[in-house]
Image 1 (tube, helix red, strand yellow):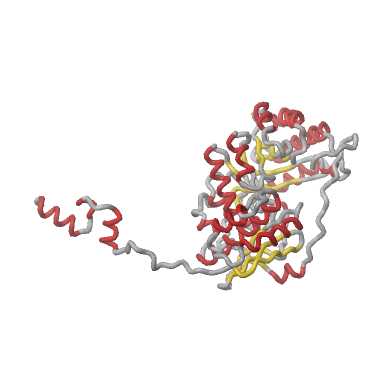
Image 2 (cartoon, helix red, strand yellow):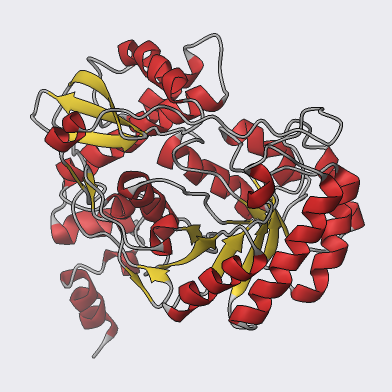
Length: 421
């Protein structure tokens, strides 16, 4: 083929790139995709109602639209339910009348248009609204929320369960049972027997933690990872003692070793131990997480999708952490709705190691929201329904009254002074 015929053939085939045309121009010439897409209107719908549903021990958000599409979110904070209920009433005017598809705009509106910001009540209220908006958006799109978040970063999410017990032997037996069902990571803490008596002593609690850790490690062997929960109970010097004694039993990480009010105290801990550390369930937005992430004081970050501002905010926290090679292990003590939201986020976020899954601890029979995610070989599988992939029985919720909020233990030391729960 001579040069003239070659040029004619290339031009005739639409391969304009060979003639110096831009990729966009070549695509438009050959596939006739219009450059002007302004005629493709996103259908506008409006939020007509925001309801708070308080049932059992849970606080749910119900958002209704003029298109008949309803979304549900979990705003449960077991320690401050009435505060969250009040915050949802305060935030409702910022949402009603708006387009539910503008999730980021509504998140910013709920947070930044208020003079007083942050804290657990705000974090949980916005979380419930955010989840409900994602549920609506997924139903409009006809796909699961994780697809709207960028698709599956992984095809399943490793989960961990819990064990408790009034003795180390009881906790070890419970751990053995979880492992027999394929759970590959187990979280525990000791001092339940002391909680029952409203008592806490650092030295006693440290040595009881090690007693439980040794018994559980012996019960499940080396193939099951163990998370040592501290619940923010210890003063820093006692946390260091715990790290030292725990090291031979190889915990996957030690969670919440000290109180949360002063993040810089983590710096001192980080300098005195090489044990893996995790913190974050009491952080309520990206700003709470910033200092811990930037200083790389922990190995794992533990935001809760019901407390930290929802799916949208968890994605941002994860992106901040990714820059510093810090992975997320999302905290989750929720029912099926909050667990579904956690799972959708964890499936789409690249730097997630595993997620908490309290529903694997034993048989579950949820009355209001179904289902819990399916777990196979220690991994949660995607929920495939549109939106969050759950069903919400409003009639059942109406039949179940909201329960009395339980008080946390009035923990005190031997001398009668206040200790942390």
